[in-house]
Each structure stands twice: as C-alpha cells, then as structure tokens.
Image (cartoon, rainbow over all chains, first blue to last red; front, top):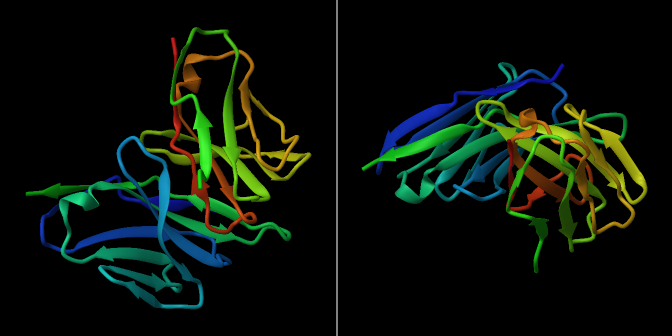
Length: 113
Length: 112
C-alpha cells in the first residue's frame, strides 16, 4: 500500500539550514514532489525529483532521494522568516495508466528569530 | 491567468444543510480533484476526475458528490452536512493524473 510519512513540526533558527524528512512505502514511485503551503493559502509546488535521481539542487533548495531506504529530504539553506510554512511531500505512483498522487501529513516549519 | 479558482473562501453550515463548493480552472487540464485537509492528517483525496464526464472516488468519498460536465468546472456537493465534514477543502488540477498539481486557495467549511 502507499503511505507517506513526515514529522509534524520542525523549528529552526533564522540563518540555519532546515532539513525536512519524508518516508514513503511504494517503491514504484515515478516522481516525488515537495509542496509549500503558506498560511491561508493553497499548496504550491516547490520542487520535484525524478525517481532515478539521487539529488537535485535549486538555489537554496536541495532534494535528496534514497530509493533503497525510501527516504526523501528537503534541505533549505540559510532559512528565512519567509520560509515559515507547512511542507508536504508527495509521491506519484503508477496506477494502470493513471498515476496517483499521494501526500504526506505535512511538516510545519517554524523559524526562530 | 487565474489558475484554479475556488468559491466560497469561508462557509458555515448547519447540520443537515446542503451546499456546493465551486472549482474552476482555466488551464485546460484534464485531471481535477478534491482534497480535504485536517490537522495531522495531511491531504486526503475525496473525488477526482480524469476528464469531462468521468469521475471516481478517492480515499474519503462518503457524504460528497461530484460531477464534471465541462473540462473547466468540478463542483463538490455536500448532500447533508455533518460536523465531521468541518475541514479545509482544496480543489486541484493537473495536466494529467500524477503530474504537478495546481491548487486553489481553499474553502474553510465549518458545520455546526
């Protein structure tokens, strides 16, 4: 079955790096996504990684994928107050010609001044 | 470019009332879906549609109906609201199922 798990909360000091972790159970995932949800808003795609990649870097964001352990992480360098949000990981799973998107529970990132 | 538009943003219902949450997208996406977001439970899929005239149930479909008469619109109907349906509802669309999803701003529904 498919299950995507994340820690519910993370607090980080401004200027430090934030690392948000995600584990998933379905090894047939094709894409893995990170979405950001700011207060009172919908989810916005932050970045994604194809399942045959180990790492993807995009400015302050680094995504690491360990397929053996089914572990995905999002590192935010030099965390700023504007990074305060809930971060969701999601996996895309093949489903008889239609892929299925399954979301994790979300991690609320709080920035400490 | 409006993207995905949801209305209303807030709604309070009494138990037993019915209502329709509206969702429209202007990106010509085939795939549309409805999620509910509850604390500590992430997003759970209610219903989805892979194209006009085609709908299917997601993870938590009970108490909700959908229809997809056009590519643009995907309304969600609550037939007889219950307090357990108090939640934040998000509509999303994507080019096809499993690809990047674009979300609306959400509807915060309270059932008293």
